[in-house]
Image 1 (tube, rainbow, N blue to C red):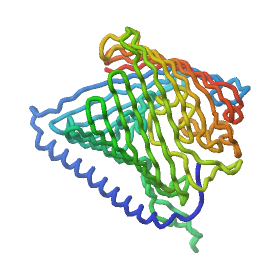
Image 2 (cartoon, rainbow, N blue to C red; image 1 turned 60 degrees about the vertical axis):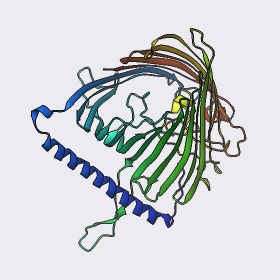
Image 3 (cartoon, rainbow, N blue to C red; image 1 turned 45 degrees about the horizontal axis):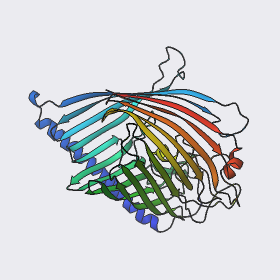
Image 4 (cartoon, rainbow, N blue to C red; image 1 turned 120 degrees about the vertical axis):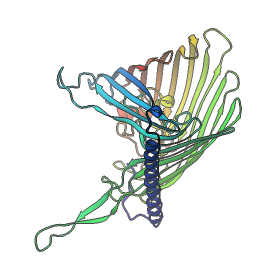
Length: 466
């Protein structure tokens, strides 16, 4: 959304060299790994050296209903749906080498053309090769990436589709330290073409103007376990991208260093993540920050195991200076990664971690706990959502503009309040059932942007692993 035309600066040449080197290293690493697998398979061809193969199945069914899903007053647009995914796969292991292949089929109930309709829905969800096991390994291919609390990069377990990436990830542990590094290809490079004026024979040969750099998301997450109840995690993420089909003049890079502090003394829990952001998008500088806190305090040893908590979040935002376009001189909107959005920002998923302040309170209880993997947890959460920059944009969880988006000259930061009532039931390793009811009421500038009608959302997730 934030776009400015112009010629990219001199730094683009450096980024081009970086990308060409990175792509060469990635290609050579994959080729080497494939060669190692070939050599290893040839050397271990004897029948007694067959691989250990483990099948697995995952079923996810999520019925839901949402009233006023577009935040537009006066529309009869209540939405009912049931989404489903079925994931089946195999894990094969031989020595230090292993491979995982998961196929997934997704559908929305009633979307097929008839009772005999067989529209294709099956596709590879995961498919990766791994060298090493236990505490140290290197993984290549399509894979889930869930790191630490998942606030900045997550496998999106709440979504029936899930989230996987193409790339390379390494994991290592030594003493009190754990390190995860990854490089993920979000968009593949391609050759840009332009048509030249017609020649004498009438043909118009294409002119190749140079390859795009694609787009890559990379990161390094480390954790030092200082004691049984204290963990400190330095981390950094980065994004690099070149021209795209939609934006042929784009150049993009940003780097986000930060740290996480995780404390678990007795019945208390504090989880704090702070990140800065420095970069450039098509010659518009990026200067942003993000701070997220979730804390909980247990209230004694009652059989109901009650607890209270707070959720605090603030992500910087840019001001919009015109009614029709939002092109700031400096991009202060924090460029989010692929995190657990509604784990922090309400289960109705109407707020993105950009130009957002979330002030939340929660009360929870565990009235039944039949062991480490068997329990029922009940939670009520309340959120007040505000814009950090009142003249900035209100974005939904998926990045779309909410209502009119922004109001030039606005001084009221208030967007909406939300109340969520949630229930989470785990029955061993097989069944995980949860659901809830959410009510979102726009207020302040949020009411002017969307018309003021509330949204209600009810959902139930049914997940089974075999």
